[in-house]
Image 1: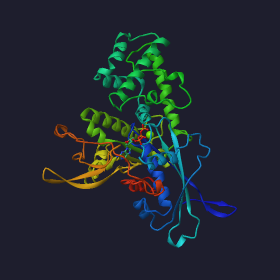
Image 2: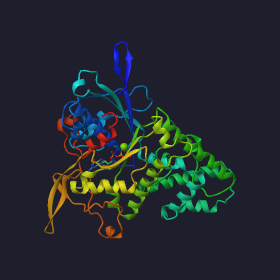
Image 3: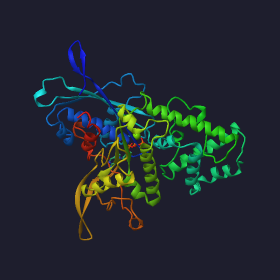
Image 4: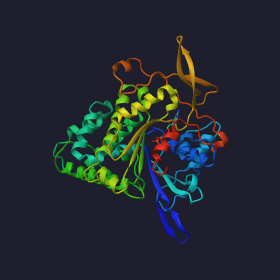
Length: 448
Ligand SMILES: Nc1nc2c(ncn2[C@@H]2O[C@H](COP(=O)(O)OP(=O)(O)OP(=O)(O)O)[C@@H](O)[C@H]2O)c(=O)[nH]1
Ligand SMILES: [Mg+2]
């Protein structure tokens, strides 16, 4: 712990720990932030909400309170609103996140045993809720316009939804003029295509993310580009816009107001990807691998990981988290965490601590043993959204590494939409979860 000399004598310096919660769209980020806030507040009130974290404290006192958003020019994460919705009868899940927001908590951690009379360590814990679409802008940081266009077009060639956009590209000569109307038509076609691929085809690996979820404060004119394999004045115009885009992403990521996170959580709904079939699984895992790769090899203009670590800033911890693990029973969750680690090829570097977890931020089910065709299986039981009574679900075995063709021959059965359990004390008693305490103990290890 660091100390500062003040008029009151030596007092501990308040540390700021900033954690970015990222993940593909609908992966469960907002639910995770809500649950972290509710459970930390409950643990701070002495309730047994986060046993692994409390054990890590080894008897030291923990106090938690909501902190003011401070001077940060970021919208505040509305914990009361989200928790209120979860605590309603019937409970409601969060709506889709439209913009970045910040959750700030004040932690006071008492000194150990003989030093208990000394002032507590104070930590301002900040968590950022990112729109899912933005995560895939990270891999673009390391790519030039040509390579990005080529990679993107290769993926699009396989999609019939891309027919109109690809037809537009086919009639464009390689040396097309730098014409604003052309740039605009191409951009609008490409942007509409991204929306279709997200909303109708359920794809994740869609770039640039800010085309789907624009940044706050209006759209800058340089947003108007699209992937284009040409090599003339139009290509030069689009390249300059692409570079301005990438620069803006980079600046936002490292500006104190916007990014500059110490730790990153990358959430992925791997169970839904397994359920949706080989194409959806390939799309999700390619997106995840691209993100892990972007964290591994930072672009040349960024500080290398080791230098950032030496200078004491930059991302020092990354947790890859398979979300919604309450869809499967405890026996399967180890496999789920192992699958997340295999897909991201952990560890990702010498100076970044990495780990994978299978978490349910808002646990909707309990484990039960079910006899299926004469054999006992570990299943789960919970109330389906809108249903009167609880039902059982056994989605099947979770693979611990990327599955081969034999897995897809017997695909994952059911992945129903569960309703959150009724919250104890209207949310003040915390939110039932799976493994949230282990995730927090990892993220906060440096201050614990
Ligand atoms: N069973 C279960 N379902 C969950 C859990 N967390 C989230 N979900 C489901 O996943 C949906 C999306 O969760 P969100 O927290 O809104 O996801 P998000 O990542 O913030 O989504 P965007 O803001 O759209 O990117 C919810 O509406 C729930 O249906 C969980 O812990 N368990
Ligand atoms: Mg959200």
